[in-house]
Length: 153
Image (cartoon, rainbow, N blue to C red; front, side, top):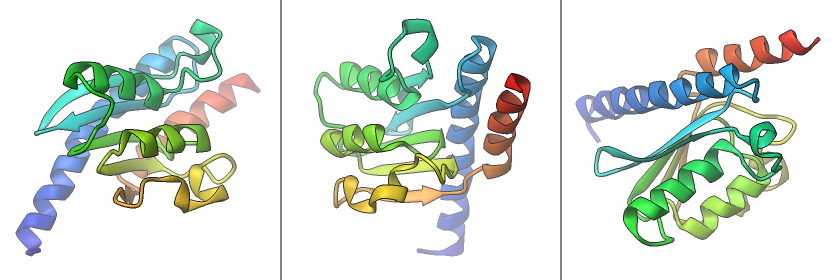
């Protein structure tokens, strides 16, 4: 892969991570943990979501789960082959499992979650063909989380 292609992938990743951050800001306004996600297929957003755990009184209403459901609905099937998930924080084990079942091609996340991220248990949770890129717009993603949790103290 040439430097030009790498730069263009980095620019694409930043563009879609910015959209995931906008979703996270929606969660923040709703007093939810500010995590946002978008699923992209063929260069278009086909699913988006943000945490709705408090709003729906549902421990499974994570941003990734909302985005996966919307994307599967848009595609008319349960598999997200050829799709990329952009999410502001590393997916938890539950979301990692759901992403494995969806057979998503790629996951891009901003901030790591050293306490509850899927990689704390095992990176084998994901589908073996799924590639992962971490640290995209890390600082912006971390700042949302830090600000939110400081406001609770």
